[in-house]
Length: 119
Image (cartoon, rainbow, N blue to C red):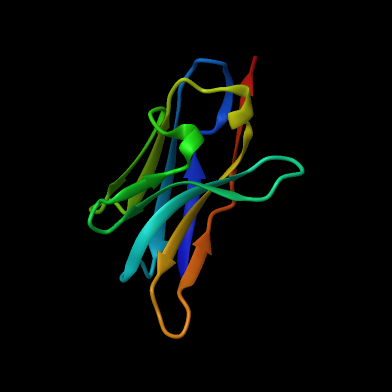
């Protein structure tokens, strides 16, 4: 099992910045990738950013150039730096860890952290 604990959410004005952290513990061996997802009220959960073991990243189009995902392998921690925040970024943000496996990968989730951007 993998435990994920997020921190760093909060209330910020439009144009401001926040940095989310996700600390992984437990059986972290074999984790292939980490991701940040978000879910706004009445909407489906969406992938915001992901980072693989090689450092390759991908981003939701609407956050490209504003958000940066990074990972500290030694500390088993993944970060999401969010700049130039917009009200539409308001959501609960969830950390995800994925371990490849057969027949299906295993996904682990944090409890979520609220990000609220005021206009």
